[in-house]
Length: 185
Image 1 (tube, one colour):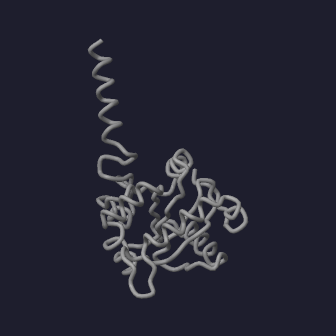
Image 2 (cartoon, helix red, strand yellow):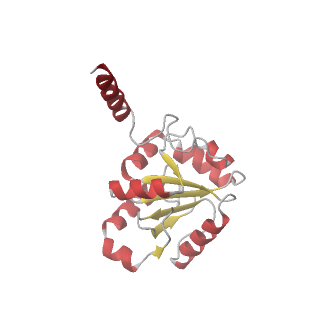
Image 3 (tube, one colour):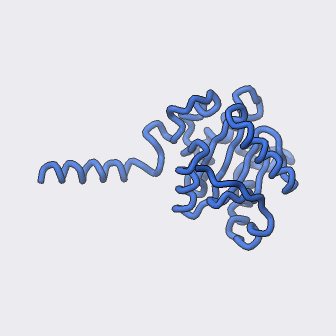
């Protein structure tokens, strides 16, 4: 009986203290990539590219926010620092998306596919690469660098994310205007 109560308490503690993130704040701990390691302490609940992220998006019926960058990319560093460490932006991401981070240098085939897909859809295809994908692997919206706040003619992250959520709600349009990827395994 005592063991069952202990197990129940541990289960409740893990449920109460876990909104899908690991103890370090996200799921990037243990990744070898310097780019991914740099994001371990960010408040965004990042996942590496893989089946767990796609399954979580499916379970929650949320789109995937995919951030592709590189340790050597100054715009990637700026977006990490100004956008993804912004608490309000991170909270918004964690509530509405499953966030996935990919290292440009560690996944060149995937990144080439993503860049081609965004170009085909007439979306920015440089670095950083910000993509919105369904749990079924359909890239339907994307951008490049997005600051936390609207700057001049530069759309803010929140503005782009709101647009991505609105497009995500129209499944028939996604079926017509998207690029299909093989879902990560």
